[in-house]
Length: 471
Image (tube, rainbow, N blue to C red; front, side, top):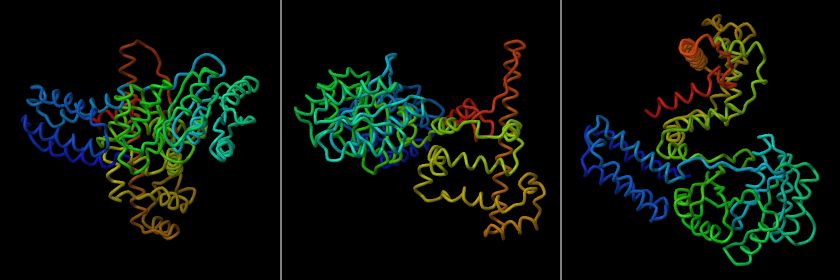
């Protein structure tokens, strides 16, 4: 999604960065190109007009044009304005203190409401909630069956009720949640092929009957500017609290995602980037802006890694990770953790320029498989003491793994580079601890394992890495 826009903006900024000085005409030319790129991505023309006006005024400031790195400063301005365009600050799901919390999903037929309901239930379940799905779409054939199947897949109970009265089913579903001690109810309502009075009246009646804590509208990111028109109609009639943008992994222009907050005043709260239950993600305007401008999204990668529990590591492995004294068994563990956060593709996509590398086909998607085969072809001693891997041993390992000696050498170089990097990070952590101790007295520093599977790296370490990249 938005790949074409991202490519065009990165090309524009590449030209700006190559110039030592920028003139007013350079800025005007860049703004014209950005305007065309946004319009071609199907961003609402009024939104584009205001965005260009604000961005241009900031870029023509003397401090920008006369700075030592004017091109980089222009990119920074565009990043900040694009973040504002996408919503500015994060808008989290707001759950009240009452039990159960009620979340109601609305939207057109085909927007992905039922799938989004199941994905949201899966996300809340991972956050230690106990959700109940309620099937209130009594019109679409097999809608309740679809929700039932999805619920069984993720281990979340579905309340279907009886009859054809969606308001009654919604009320009964909430009562069932109270009886079964569920703390969150997610109501999947019916949609229509287009906005009509009957659909709006039904949505309002369900809303009034169950008094939801949050009303989320599900919109299909692939429907272009019509997303904004539909969202505006729902905002006027139902007054929803936020948006779930589905099908963000599609290949359409997707400018609706850049328009919806500015036109409707309603924030995007979640985006769906795939078909799997775990593909629903909280929406972060700043991170999306960085992805669009080719700056990567290391922080999201960190958070995905943080969800892997430290208990998966044995005590001995954890201690070696803390000392950054990795052997090849530990390296194999790290590779498995990378798989759990989405594999090589997700890892590379989160890095600056990663999307471009994936599109150019320069990323070896089978890298983890190759590493595992090579390591598994070694003896126990070789995995625990990699320093014994001389030339003859590497030749034997290569033959056993069905690869060349060069591939074994490359894998060993990656292992040694990773080990060296981790030692540097851990050494910096020790220096930081000494510095903090000097400032705050004799307070002892707790030893921390960092992010599981990331060899002792903590959130702060990789956030600093992202900050270094951004600079």
